[in-house]
Length: 131
Image 1 (cartoon, one colour):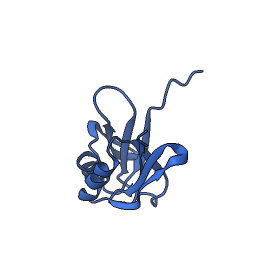
Image 2 (cartoon, rainbow, N blue to C red; image 1 turned 180 degrees about the horizontal axis):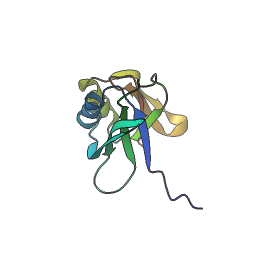
Image 3 (cartoon, helix red, strand yellow; image 1 turned 90 degrees about the vertical axis):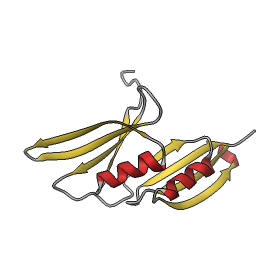
């Protein structure tokens, strides 16, 4: 198969600086790089975020300079976590909102919660259930 792996997800945001702050301060992602494109008909700013060090899957925050962000609900970002309660608390402290509180899902051997970032983009947090 030619596909080697999943590379990134892009979320189109209205306020790139505020969303970058939320994902870095509230969820602990790191900034890999920032991109600015200013070409005719193609004007945008983008922040590429990662979890941990080195190559891996990225979450890209994209803001078009000359067009509004679409309504929220266009994507759900799923993050695997170790301590779901602390991650939810960090997200809330950084301006996020709990949309589905932490709950056990024994049929899938996991715990989950949903939080929304300050613009309303959904983040599903999952943690394996303890054996």
